[in-house]
Length: 467
Ligand code: SAM
Ligand code: SF4
Image 1 (cartoon, rainbow, N blue to C red):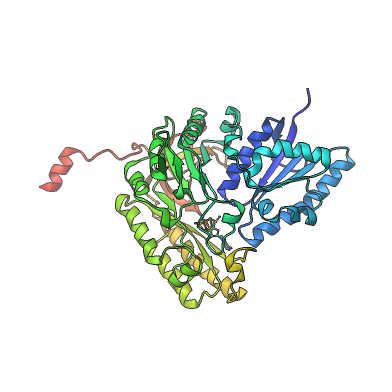
Image 2: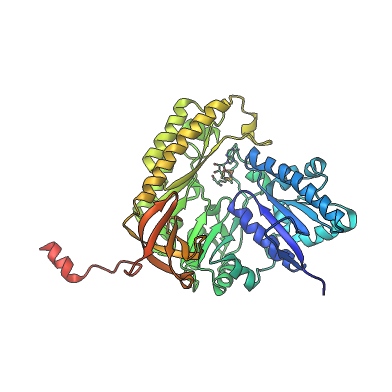
């Protein structure tokens, strides 16, 4: 019997790439590949790339330089190493990658991962293979389901792609070009995927998509289901105790999603809702199709049904023509909303996007100092949010053993990592934890004795309060 071949996948960028890497590994498992954590002894290395900012794209070429040395060394030892570039850089730069880095054997765009076995065979026979078309068939119909042992090895929390691509065309963003038009998977396929994951130990599902709340998949009744209805259906899956979704667009928050937050205890009260800027002038230039006040209105709708809800967001500083006044509007919005966490980026012009042709650029020094100011504000909000948990008892879903011996780590409803000393038997359970201290972004605590959800007030207490 042939020994298994070793596969190493290095993923950059978003959650979508993490999920895609798993699906590529599942596809190649059928070809006799097993995953390895290092590229040093791999027979196939896949770089699963991100094109969202220039820095992310350029990382690929420096990594390819390192892989060239490994590939040469493998060849000297009589071993064949193949290198594939997948993801959004593959889609955007296609044959340019092979021109810049002839060490690459396969270039494959995000919509063609189900063709990987064929592309590898082609590269073996002809030296190279390249596929960056948007095929007519849906890759999800062809990607094999993960094996039970792969599901178990990946832990109790899993991503499931429900939607891909984006039709919004924000003027700074490459996603509509690299991932294509918005497509939603049918409800039943998602329900089956989630049930299979739950059967093999998964307890938390994060539904993902570039614009996940634009979801409009075909339901079993033949009608189009919005995300809220899908969440209601998935909440019925035995074994699934937590549901999340990411990333949402403020324009696509509909009543079904608000109702899902009102009605489903399993749907976590933590929403990533990127706004990008607090200035209406910049929001128009970005083609975001919402104003700052409409964004605040959306936040209020969530808060009205779930007062304990918290938000994270994405911001871009230094978008072309952004003035100090525009930036002040962003800081003001952050102050008004109060975030539990947020990501902020310096604007990076991406070839082929409308904003890349805008002339009124902001200087690098200006961008740097705006980024620092924004990040300081966000950090202070995040620290205050975390500090407020000290002395509180919060529900934690335990995920795995931590680095420190005897410690188990899990996550709160707000994705804060929480560490306790306990037996690994608690992995997969939601248990109450009394938070005793903070360590940077992590919470430290002890398993508490109270039941995870507070019991209803006792009748005699209600009577005395009213007396
Ligand atoms: N779909 C999401 C939304 O509606 O905002 C975000 C998708 S994108 C993968 C993640 C984040 O990257 C964006 O929210 C934005 O803040 C940032 N981003 C996208 N293009 C960028 C660019 N050209 N320069 C800097 N940051 C960018
Ligand atoms: Fe990019 Fe998000 Fe805008 Fe779509 S909605 S174009 S993914 S930033």
